Length: 214
Ligand code: SAH
Image (tube, rainbow, N blue to C red; front, side, top):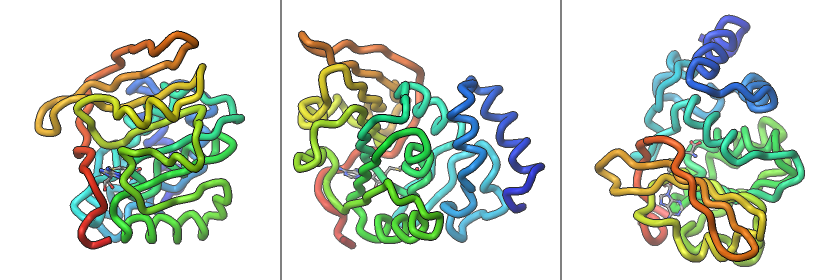
């Protein structure tokens, strides 16, 4: 199936029925073709609301989870955003439509290289992708208005909290990697951090260090 009118309608229906209701987020997900990020695995399922395998044993998230995480960031279009866990690059591409600048990092060099090719092909010029251990953030580009972690950590990593601007928001799945995790929203205030628990999710774990294939 290609990203034609029928595929878009089906995807938008699935997104709305899972609570993705903000029009700018829905428009971004209607503009960005998930098929371009799915690679050769299960191309016919690219527009279904399911996670799919990508190279290096990782997964591209379920579209409704991408939509809900994006909504949770409350983007206005002016933000500098850091994403940890580039994976296929799909989430970064959605963010690029709703924020000023997106930095994204992954510990697998191969995934970063593939995602860069798709960003170039789609002319998404406001995304910069790096191979790095995202647990340390990107100190050279900090502070960030928003941080989105798309791998599960046991706790929100300290260096990421430190790189969040006052007034900034971080969304991160927290919990053991083999159990259901909780999606947490952390807001940095003048005096500290406020935490909201959003919903149960299931992500691959945040792993220390660069991958061996990198
Ligand atoms: N956001 C992605 C899906 C991410 S899957 C998408 O839209 O397709 C989680 C990703 O986190 C994997 O690609 C994995 O390699 C990466 N990851 C895990 N631990 C990491 C770390 N410490 N630093 C950077 N990336 C990490």
